[in-house]
Image (cartoon, rainbow, N blue to C red; front, side, top):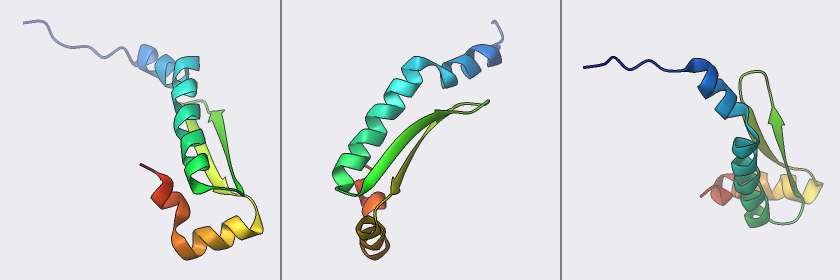
Amino acid sequence: MDKFVLNTKGVGDLLKSAEMQSVLNEYASGIKNRAGIGYEYDVQVNPGRAHALVWADAYQAKADNSKNNTLLKAVK
């Protein structure tokens, strides 16, 4: 039986790839849309991997998120 060897460079490339950024963009925009007005999102690539951020940008959104956990509920 052959031993499994993980291609760590390949995994690293995958985690930073345009395809991964596209998937993250889709998820983050969905969360933003479910959260409502005043929320923003961004997809960034760091040395290790791509990641998405969604945050309350407007005062009303910050208050809404604080009171109702809107971002947490928007993650499905």
